[in-house]
Image (cartoon, rainbow, N blue to C red; front, side, top):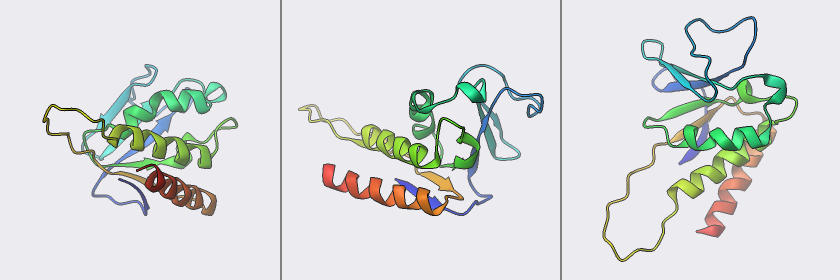
Length: 142
């Protein structure tokens, strides 16, 4: 499930990390690579240059975010660029979650892995509205 909530210290939080002079110490600067700091319950995903990061680039990492093996809080604001808005981020993550969670008919009996929650933190009113619309759209599809 994808939902909106306030930041919690119980779950890991994912931040976007862009190439800059003020790099977070010890973050591995390899495209789309997630660096995890267990003590701080923080993850950083390195995304290269901020000016080149757009919706297509975000779509390419949405699966990484959604398929995290743990419940993950996403710092949506850290992903926003001149070419990518909060509304687009929420829409893409919701669509990725629908695709990941979707059932495909098969005659084989196989237990499907449970998908962990993804929590979007500190959304604006526009982001909350997009999440609501995306969830309603998902219910119609199912």
